[in-house]
Length: 265
Image (tube, rainbow, N blue to C red; front, top):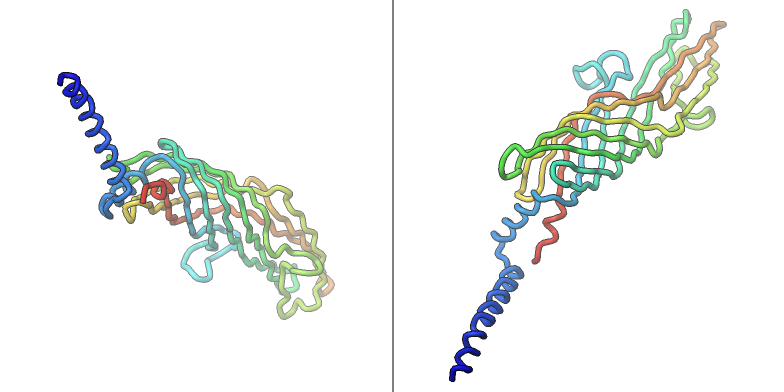
């Protein structure tokens, strides 16, 4: 009898523990919508991988004078990118692919002829960003963060490259139909630009974030130089266009943490 009693006392804790484990597994696999939202909310704020989709406008001063569409000094061009990132603590690493537009028109007056030539400074380009973000949470729930970012961006290609026989970088206007032009084009072999700035990150939809960025783009070198030698009405001269994409940029991004997809359904 004593042996049977000891056996029962030994088995009861094991049975209870087994039932608790089975109940926990059952609960994890049958979470309510509210419980899933809570877990996604918690997991989205933890370290891990994420996707970032962003778009914005860049203000530059390639074209002298006022912008054609806005009451500002300088041109506005767009930029879009998709990034894959990883956060560890307050530091994030990001890379991906982006596309930046750079379109501008510059008029050059041709000596004393009274005529001008309309030239295009275009450098619409795809680029590879490699960057870091450092930000700190401003509340206990980590729903708002603020910090700084920096990236090096390697330009992979540019569209509509000018040449003497295909796509040109100018258009003739009335009075310049008989102009003679000789173009000399110099391209940088490995163009790149740097971006530095500040950003804020705000939680939205419980498990994702809205990121607002203000940055400055700096071109270390001139990407493309076009030297124009012209002759018109017994006069001749030369001028050049240099392409850089420096300027202020404002971007809005949607950040999707990938941790939320690791939860049991």
